[in-house]
Length: 236
Image 1: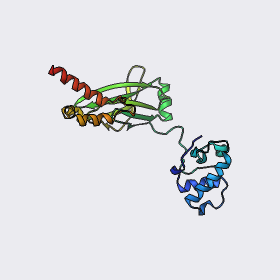
Image 2: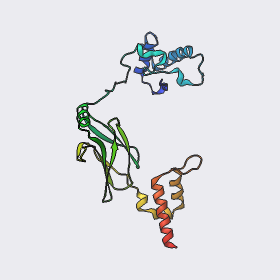
Image 3: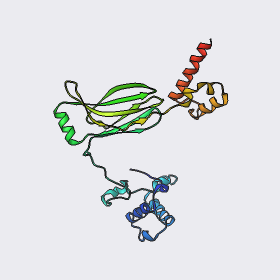
Image 4: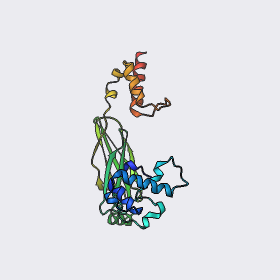
């Protein structure tokens, strides 16, 4: 069951839900009027629910609340995704400066052909950072469709290809992602500006510190601290 906040629903969605609940004339009602009527309706349904939990009052057409899926077709804003896609493709999305999210699909024709030939699947990762190039393979299975790729901070890019590997080791490229730029850290190139500014250093630390005061594992700050330690060792 999906519980949603009423503030996240459009007027069209609210009117659709009102019709599902048997509220007549929903098309002519305002947003506030529909919410009020739905609130009364869900209070009747949820007598045993905690009245303080407002989200229990508002259900969308995506829920199985009272098995509503039996009576509703094509809920607003919902598109049914296919189980398989006709093309073999791979894409990259940047999650943050340290991670990329790779997702892909292998067409049924390619999948059958490759498995008949007993070929394996790998993700070929290429990272170019500040002139240095790194390449490595990540073995994946035919049932896999996503993977997280760790990336360094710097100036360059990361690109991932979906490759098939034959039993004799020959590699065939099935699809190549668009390159994603790496995130450059100003402070890794200018550590002294932070090292000798207490206020700047404290400000930066507060951005990656939890409410309890624990330091979040941040690779940039870790690298900056390591730079500080190396410089302090040289000074000694």
